[in-house]
Image (cartoon, rainbow, N blue to C red; front, side):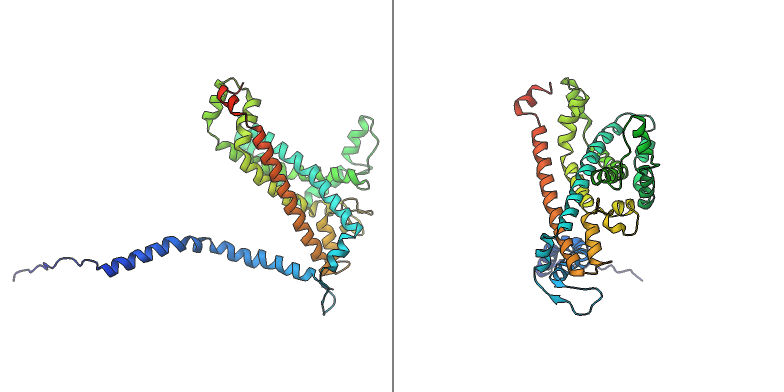
Length: 333
C-alpha cells in the first residue's frame, strides 16, 4: 500500500490577518509599559495619595476623636496653627536638629565612602561594619545615648570634666538636646548613606582617575574634580531622603526624653519636633484630629520647600565644582 504525501502548500497569512497582527503589536508596544508600571501607581493611590487627600479633608474640620460629629470649619485650624507659639517652637526645634544631623551626616558619609573606595585590607568587613549602627534597634540606641548624655553620671560629661568643662544638662538645655539627638542620628545613619555613595563611586570608570593622575592631580583634586561632580545625582538622592527623614524625626527625641509626658520633648519642649507636636494634638492628650492633620500638612509643605532648596544648593555647588572649559583642556593642575 503506497504512502501518499500531502503536497498542499503551507497556508499564507491573508492581508487581514497580517494587519490585525500588526495592530496588536503596535497596541502592545504602546500600552504594555503602562500596564507594567500600573501596580506602583495603584498601590501609591491607595496607600499614599488617598491618605494624603483624606488628611487634608480632616484638617478642615473640628474633629474630636472622642466625639461623633466632626464640624467643618474651613481653614480655621491653619489660622490657629500659624498663631500657635508652641507650633513655631517645634518648627525651630525640627530645623535645628535637622541642620545639626543632616549636614555633618552627609559630609561624613561622603568622606567615609571615599575612604572605603580605596585599596584596604578586609574591605568587605569594613564595608559591612559601617552598616551595623543602622540595623541596631532605635530604642536600644536611644537608651544607650540617653545614658551617655546623662548629666550626673554620663560619660560625655565625665570626659568634658577631664578637660575642665562644667557638666552640661543635655536634656534640660535646648541647644544641648539638639546636639545629643543629632549625634544619635548621625551615628545611626552615616554608614547607610556611605554605602549608597560607595556604590555610586564603584560605577565611576577608573580611566578618569588615571587620566587625572597623569595630568598631575592628587587624591584631593581627583575627589573634588572627578568624584563629586559625577556623584551629583546620588548626592541629590541622599539629600532628599535625609531631608524627609530628618524633618520627620520622632523616635529619637521621643525616647531621649523620659518622664511623665515625654511627647513634649522635655518639660519646656526643649526638643519637641513637629511630628511629636502633631502626635500630641492628634492623639493623647488632646485628641484633636483636625488640628493634628493641619500640622501634618504644614510639615509636608516644609519638607517640600526644604528639599527643593537643598536640591538647588547641591546643583549650584555641583556646577561650581566643575573646572572651567579652559582649565579642563589644560588639565587638572
